[in-house]
Image 1 (cartoon, rainbow, N blue to C red):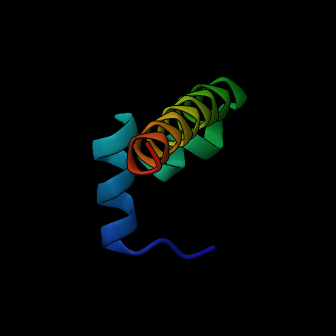
Image 2: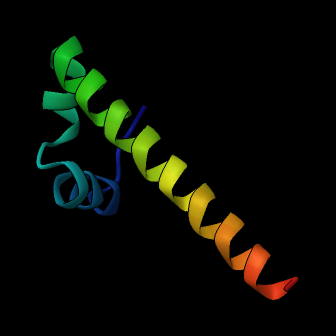
Amino acid sequence: MNYTQEMEKAMEQAHGMNFAEYERKLSNRMKVERRRDLDYQRSKEVVANATAQIHK
């Protein structure tokens, strides 16, 4: 996959590594994916809480 400059910058800002580092080691990929999963879970909680507040 070809990565754009914007994608590279976002990866660096969000995870502290570039795509080459991400692809090089499984431990790097696992660290990033764990963090992404946690962010996703937190986002789901925020949406659920907001939805509950709206429907009170």
